[in-house]
Structures are given as C-alpha cells and as structure tokens.
Length: 285
Image (cartoon, rainbow, N blue to C red; front, side):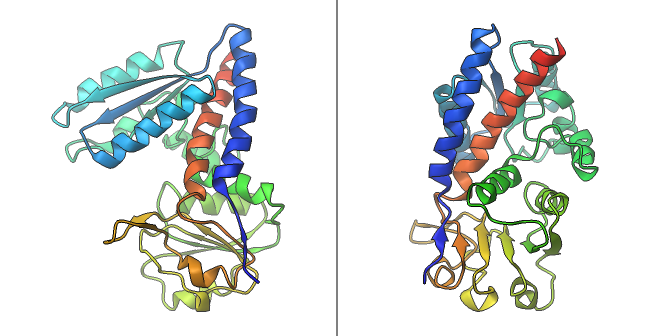
C-alpha cells in the first residue's frame, strides 16, 4: 500500500486562511502586520523566493516591502537599512534573503536584526532561546514540518527521529524542536558511517542534504514518516527531492512530495511569525 501523501500545499492554504483572519483582526484594531525583506544582488533563485513571499503576504493582508541592493553594496549600507527597519513601528518582521555576497559577514547582518523582529529566527539570541525551549518565534522550515506532522496526527513523543543534514536552517533547529516534543533524535551528516543503518531505525525521517535521490526504499523502515526538505533541479529541468519518492512511497506510511510538500509551509510559517510578532508588539504596547 502506498504512503499517505502529506500535501503541504493544502495544509498551507488552511493555515493561511486562519492567518488572514488574525491579520484582519489586527488591522481592525489599527495595527497592520508588516514584513520587510532585504535582498542583495540579482541571484535568480533569491528573486523568485522574494516574489513568492511578497505575493503570499498580499493574500493574508500583511504589508510587505522589499529593499533591493546591488551585489557591490557595502555591508554598512545594508546594516543602516536594517537599523531603520528596527526603529520603524510599521515593520514587525525583517528578513535578509540568503545567501549574501562573499564580502558580507552574514552572522553580523542577521544579528543586527532586532530580536523581536527576527522572523527567520536566525539571531543568536533566538537560537539560544530555541536550545533552552523558550523560543518566541520558531525557524520557519522546521516549524512548518511540525505543523504538517500535527495536521496528520503523527505522534512525535517517544518516536525515533533521524535527521539527515546539520544545517543551521533545517537540521540543527529541527533536532531541537523534535527533542522538545519528546522524540529520541539522531543527527546524521555526510560523514556518517553506514547511513542506512541509522535511517532504517527512524519512525520519523527528515532529509535535508541537497543530494537528489539520496534516500532509497531499502533505507527506510516500513510505515515510517518521511519528510523530504530537499529541492534539486535535475539536468532535465525537473525538480526532485533528496528522497527517491517513487520507490519510498511504496514503503513509507507518510511522505512529503517535492514540490508541494515542505516548501509551501516554509513561507506560510514566515507569515505566521510576522503576525505573531505583530500580536506580541500590540500586547506589549
């Protein structure tokens, strides 16, 4: 029997409908949620992502603005822009589209964002809050994955969770968030010996490596939940995940497709964090 497909697009639509209601409620009380995006350079993929975010904001009544800089811009000019946005009461969320040009110190840039406006949750303070289990705003992609698991009633507590990939954006925060939910967590990397020995033990397997087709059917437990975060452009132009979807879906219990799985949820949780940040601002005023 084939796995049940976790349709991120449908879940995102449901969540965004609720977010629009929350945004409209804030607007009625005189506070429209505002998101500012900073993009440096003309990377095509980054421009596509930013356009998706702007379009998504519009649909849920979030004000959005994009601050574009050429790749030759000095870091200080971008930091000055961030400082202005930090002080702007109409902006409740700020994100810097990564990657930045090589002459930037990405850590310095992301940590210049006000903690309460850090909707990507990359600031070191927010990373520390996540470690201690006290995060106000959760990293968007792992947050979206938790929502997907919840919507399908997939148990986390007491389960064996294996994460393949240790990035600061997905792997590390995902491990902390699953640990907080009561899972037993294993993190695997490109250096892990006998990767399959670990992945076959997983009740929940999250894969975020950027290596298309890395996980095959013989590497997963029957009935496991497979979350594929990878999105790779193949030579034929098609998109593929890090999981061999066609073979694994015949063995897994639940599986996310690529595209249409985790991707829509990442942007959705960015919207959620922006509204959450706005509500916290109002509560504190």
